[in-house]
Amino acid sequence: MTNSTRNEWINLTASDRHNLSAFCAHPAEPSQGNIIVIQEIFGVNAHIRSVALSLASKGYTTLAPALFDRAKKGIELAYDETGMQEGIALKNQINWENALKDIQAGIEYFGTNNPVAVMGFCWGGTLAWLSATRLSVSGSICYYAGQLKNFLDETPRSPVLAHFGENDHSIPLTVPATLKERYPGVINHIYLDAGHGFNCNERESYNPKASKKAMQRSLGFLESIF
Image (tube, rainbow, N blue to C red; front, side):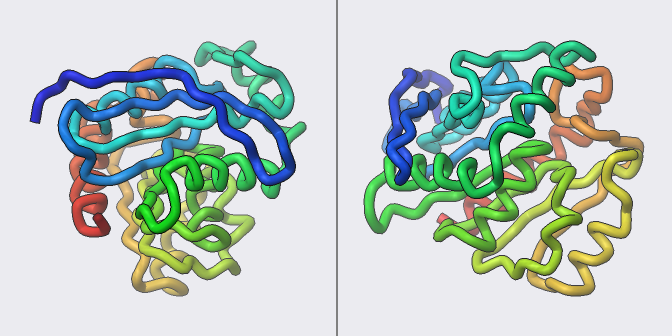
């Protein structure tokens, strides 16, 4: 598979007529499947775009909707205290239902009857879980989903793969334990010596070993559902 990909910014329209932008990465060869990458609270920044481009290089058409467009357009925040506080403030302006409408708009971009998976990080990880419980997706990949603990009573309707860091102080290990107990079909992995945001090479918590292993497992999961 060649690493040559094409990318562009496109416009989506949600069911409530809200218009939002989305970063779209196309594979160089015929697509093996469609993936929606769901942002953290830092916007569709360089990290999220790099995930989309990496997945495109593996043969997937990948879309990253700008969920913060409902509050403020063109948001791309740094991984520092200022960026975190601004991201939290913006996230708090957007309820779960509206964020899911925007994800649904991404699903519809791929057309009727075309399978779509979602992959989300932090805030996006929780939205990936909610996509599995509330939307029609082929599968969901949840990286360090910080608010998943608030939605453990919602049963997923599609396959789910969840990644957790052993040292993630924002997500107690009771969350993956509860997932294992309540939903045996959910695949969840705990990465030793990994904290929150371990997949992002722009964060101090970046863990190359955990990041590589989690992506290997994610790619295997995607191959199993497409």
